[in-house]
Image 1 (cartoon, rainbow, N blue to C red):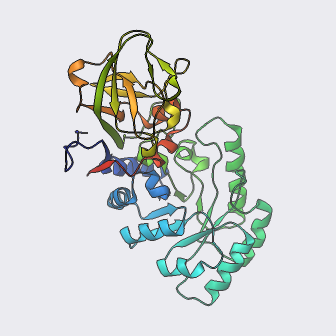
Image 2: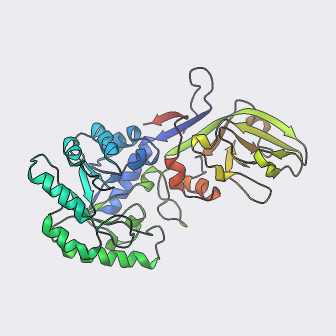
Image 3: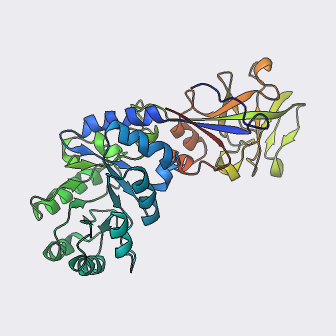
Length: 369
């Protein structure tokens, strides 16, 4: 992806480039794995930080007609962008909210007998009520009906979709995957004719037993690796670039940042960029004397973060980068150009999901279509 040009008023502090074409390509790849079942898209948390305004039109253009969100207001945003799509809301039915679902043509995912009672009571008197999904818990113990309550739930309603959620799909040989696949198969046997949905991004790589009528990938659509430990089959979607605002030379023994956690072991060249944890770049990515931190790419050279990540600033050791490419006004890459989301997360002691969903509002956003 090319570097963004200057924003009005001069160089932007940081540019977040989103490749909408890559989102579409990633969905098509995953839809191929989901076949002969269908493939939806999880666009909760503002499309994992990418932005639903960028993600949903690209996904609709690729052929996606079903979306999953977490909250009612998220569903309303997706409905505005995809008027004809099927939209499921994952996080249950809030008391008294049934009319809001009907007004926006959103399908609630019901996970308790109380929710089922409220929804069916509403739907009996409301012809415009959309069908609902039913969530059965197979091991997460977070949301969803316990399996022993499923027969009673099915006596009260016929869902449009029966779904469950993997606990550990990204670890292909985790024994809990097989247990969940078996438990969901048993649940589906109680509801013949009802479509099923189990596979998330990583679940699409667990084999035929995980595939049902509808898969619902999320993270992989946005460039995350659904197969950790193996090459990433997905196209990168996000590039985060920042402009160097100051460069300085320091001698051996100089310290950097709050609490002086990083010490120069010799003469070093340091560059400061105007990005920090207020922008969603994790504070935990700091580099210290006893801890390697995150990286930035300067003219393709990996350069370590030096010291604490501040609210608005990060210092990078650019000693090994070409001096001609690491001056005030030059651009460094924090995500992209081979520095993958998962790598950024690992170096910060977290996961790529958190990096994506925390992408800040202060970036100048650029969508490549």
